View 1 (cartoon, rainbow, N blue to C red):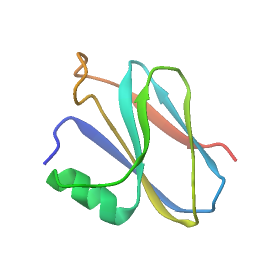
View 2 (view 1 turned 90 degrees about the vertical axis):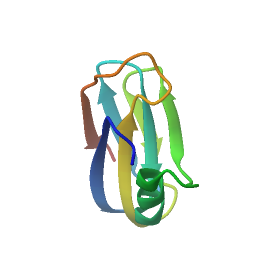
View 3 (view 1 turned 135 degrees about the vertical axis):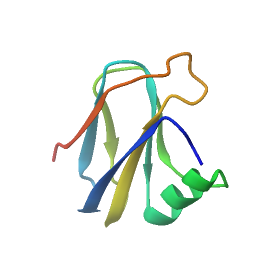
View 4 (view 1 turned 60 degrees about the vertical axis):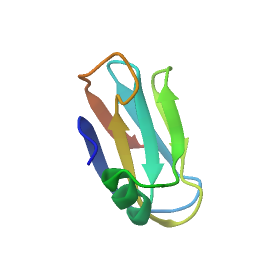
Length: 90
């Protein structure tokens, strides 16, 4: 199980919607489906969109219609605590 992670359940979103993640520090932002978020939590192979958010805000575009999640963590980074806010832009 991944520790120090915050998961946001975004619900059903249409393709091309922009998800904005506001962070107070550099962190990993991972946009995933339900199957992939479950795999991520179990530490097995998963697919995601996103990466290390070095700019703020960090925007991610929904690639296809579906139920989406955003996971924010600091795995591999020197920071351990963070604050994150996720909003749907358009």
